[in-house]
Image (cartoon, rainbow, N blue to C red; front, side):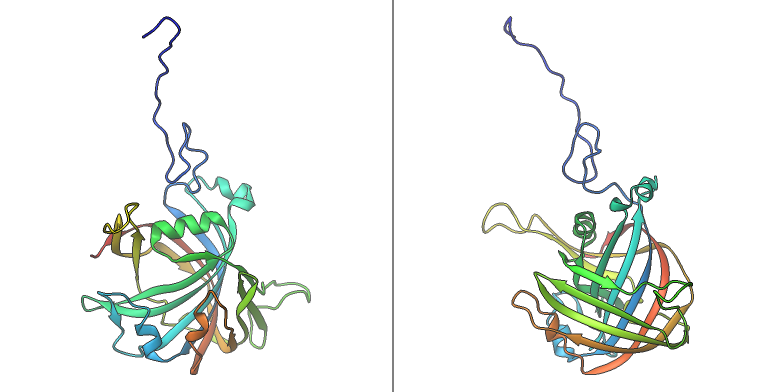
Length: 271
């Protein structure tokens, strides 16, 4: 070492995901577990089973029963890590998403699979990359219930909820749900563990992917309020950069409203 040189100690960088820093505070997301509380508005319907099958990469196969069943789910979430510090800084906790779920099979077991999903916060996209959700930015809105006044519907028979989805300045979906009666379930399409792919192309052209995993994940903990079912008027729209409208509404099944709480804390590799 020369007379004008000083040795600078190299400290480890920290953070669950980039950007990493000496403290880890700049990381886009904290380490799991992640806790979610939110309102779900679900619309289930049947489409052409061939349109579902073409979204299922090997080694997944369509579900043997009701293979054309689809669920579009609007969710108004509040989420946090174990510290719960995000709840006192709500811009870090609150976000909305709309996701499209189908069912599939692998090794003789039925799974749910998210084939499209839009969110309105970057930290939600980052969590999706880790979990295998194909998240993109979008504009998502849904009617919120409230027990007082005339500015919101109640979670009760005859009350109506609206929901919209847009991305890249184009509306992709809209729904109006009219609640009818309490329900024992919140639907069946999104009722299984998730089978997702975690994929990252190689930085070297022509080389195999740097990451290519089929994984299973689900809630480490779950609780929910009463579910309500009803009827939905769902419309899908064309876009030059999206393919949601190809999952055409051939037959309505039902609509649901439920408030839920979920904890996610990892999954396992299937293949």
